[in-house]
Amino acid sequence: MGVKQAIKSLDAFPRAEEHLLQKTQSGALVSIVGLVIMATLFMHELRYYLTTYTVHQMSVDLKRGETLPIHINVTFPSLPCDVLSVDAIDMSGKHEVDLDTNIWKLRLNSYGHIIGTEYLSDLVEKEHTAHKHDGEKDHHEHSDHGSHLGGAFDQASENMIKKVKQALADREGCRVYGVLDVQRVAGNFHISVHGLNIFVAQMIFEGSKHVNVSHIIHDLSFGPKYPGIHNPLDGTERILRDTSGVFKYYIKIVPTEYRYIWKEVLPTNQFSVTEYFSPMKDFDKSWPAVYFLYDLSPITVTIKEERRSFLHFITRLCAVLGGTFALTGMLDRWMYRLLEAVTKPNARSVLR
Image (cartoon, rainbow, N blue to C red; front, side, top):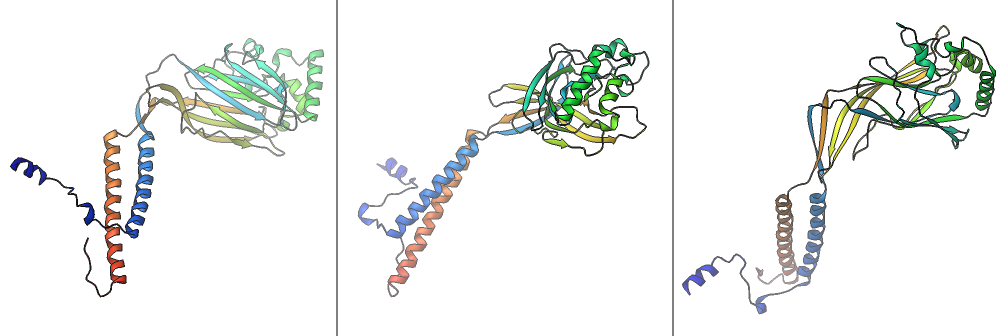
């Protein structure tokens, strides 16, 4: 019996006899409020425990020999699809020709609705490389638009001019959409009228200052999207009025790995961008274009999803529930004493 009595003396929660307990309306009200508070805090802590958070780590990028996917979705509201071309050049100056690349040009009417599509299986005009002279600097920036034709107009050129002028009169636009796979080195891709013969372009636009390269970037990314990613060029609108020029977006790409909580790894890229616009001048021999010049960072960022430990969840749960229980107990005692003092001012205070 002595051992049992010693064990009982350790009880931190002694029980009173049922007939000694007094239940009050104020105590019931405080209990209900306490239960509501504890249930709310419990749901909050449970949601906090189930919510993942991210941890960022940096290391040297060790990838080699991989391609860089470029997701493009850009609208040119003032240029028909027949005059637009997409070109990609890497840091060596060689044109990228990737038959596996999926690039579409979507014809748009004046209201922005799609009225036709064209698939680009080859990113450069065949004449770009066939007639490029050794030592020339930036063949596209000067009279490369059609030197292969020597200024001669044939029936196809006349039909082209007539078709494009009609499209311009109808206020047709064009959306360039798709995925461009390039080598994982510094380079650029640009969207312009460089695919046209220079004389054809002159007949159509009557000068480079009339080539309106206004554009809306719906999406420009360098890999799949992960939770929380922000592509700074998405939603960019650059509308020109009575002028034209060359847009250049200098992009710094940061290789990124996103590791989900279930250990799946998503390789992708983030980027930062700086913008530069050069207006056309009367003596300029170049033609307006939109350039995206990119370079890769040697540092890769790893973003890992993690979840708080279960012991941390239990600790916080005990703290908030225990604290609420203790607070409501104190409130109940204070309310009981206050009611006793009001209803029985001459009676002794009853301690519970």
